[in-house]
Image (cartoon, rainbow, N blue to C red; front, side, top):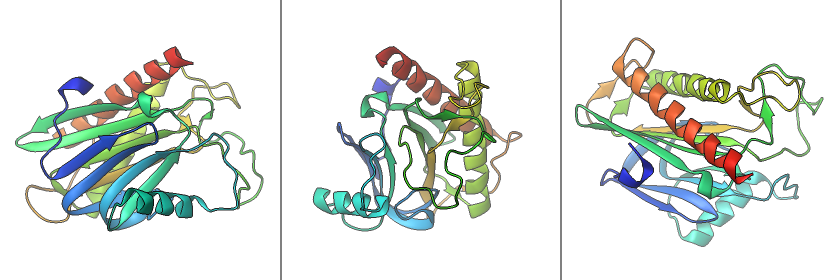
Length: 232
């Protein structure tokens, strides 16, 4: 499904500007993520992907920057937030409906920070001083209720799918020159309703939900990479 054919479910609000991609939930949603603002397993009202300057080193912690931005926008409630130096124009959305369930993947892409898992890290300390924010950020949304373990599995499938898309595009690590598996600062959020049916317990490669998530992420990352390479 192309981006211009995307229809968000009625319980999910969406807006996109030059500064952000924002989702608002009209009902309680659970989110599992590595987001810098309210990461981990959280009940959320909003998800935001915020554009920031590349290598933006300030005294303000990223979570504080994101929280301040959410307050300025008037977004009430709990927000899970990610940052990226990538253009919001790189956003690509893919959607599938299965047995009345909507599944969506939203992706923004920056590639100057491409890395392969296991590459030597620049910061030889457990507390980095400053990070490049050119990222591949992924938001997974489903209107089905996932168990926590199925949410972990969905994130695993999406991460493998991202790596597959980078392999297909022959994107190379800026460090090792081997095929990249992501960037140095990628983030991912998976969100679904806290209540309701159907209840998804499994999301691996042998089940339909895992297949669909893998396909949607490969398609969205591939198209977002294509935009990024053309734009730069």
